Each structure stands twice: as structure tokens, then as C-alpha cells.
Image 1 (cartoon, rainbow, N blue to C red):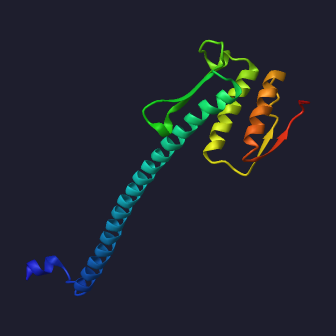
Image 2: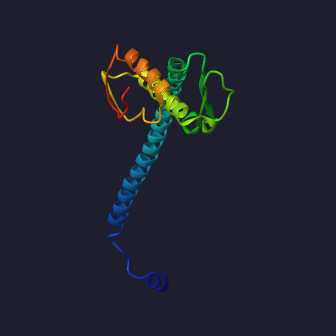
Image 3: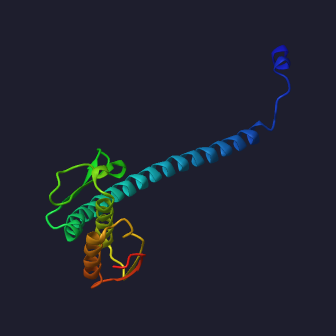
Length: 175
């Protein structure tokens, strides 16, 4: 009797409370399992997208590399141009632009004249453009730093590209 009295009153509702707690536990356990599965699914999707992005970037980069050599030589016959990736991870790598006009030694882009830098940038722009050309293109003051000789080269290249696309060029240059 003393032992039973020390336990105190017996909760007759304990079965229903236990059933409710088991139901709540099962609900939370299912929610947890759903979250774990969702995280795994998201990680798989991220991995798949990352792989696809790397593949597409590498494919596009190779096309731009090839086009850059071609477009640079449209401006400077016998010039040398290249694009390189510096780093292990293609998506986070630094892109190195090398350009050497004919008759000059290989040097940093910083060592080129303003016109040579502009021609290099325009050649790169056209190299990217060639990967997925559009029916028209608007160029605003891209020729501003060019001298008359480079303006002539620029005009010749524009005439060549105009065979496949229409160009609107905003310029203050008379040529």
C-alpha cells in the first residue's frame, strides 16, 4: 500500500497520450527523412548542373579561343592571339588574353597602345559574337581609341561581318 501511495495517482489517459506522442514522433521522423532525401536530391541536382555548366563553358571557351585567333588575324594579319585558362577549376579560373600585333614581341596587354588594346577587345568581342551570332548588333563608340589605320581595319572587318548580320555603329569618326 505504501509503495502504491508513493507512486501517486495513476494517469489513466497515458495510453492516449502515448499514442499521440508516437504519432507526433512518426510525423517528425517522416519530415526528417523527407528533408534528408530533399538535401540528397538537391546535392545531386547541383552536381549535375555543375557538370553541365563546366561542359558548356569548356565547349564555348574552345569555340571562342578558335574564333579569337581568326578575328584577331582579320585585324592584324600574322598577329598572334590566344586565350588561356589559369587555374584548375574552369568556372573559377582566370582568363588570360594574349595578343601580339605583327612585328612586336609577345608582351602584356598593358604594354600595348590604346588602339591595339581596343582592336584586341573588339576581336574578342567578335570571337564571342561568332559563337552565337544574332541578326543585328549595336556597337557604341568601340572605335573611339582607334587611329585612321585601325579604323580602316575595323571598317573592313565590319564589312565582312555585315554579310551575315546587320550592324548599327554609333561613332564620331568620319571614316
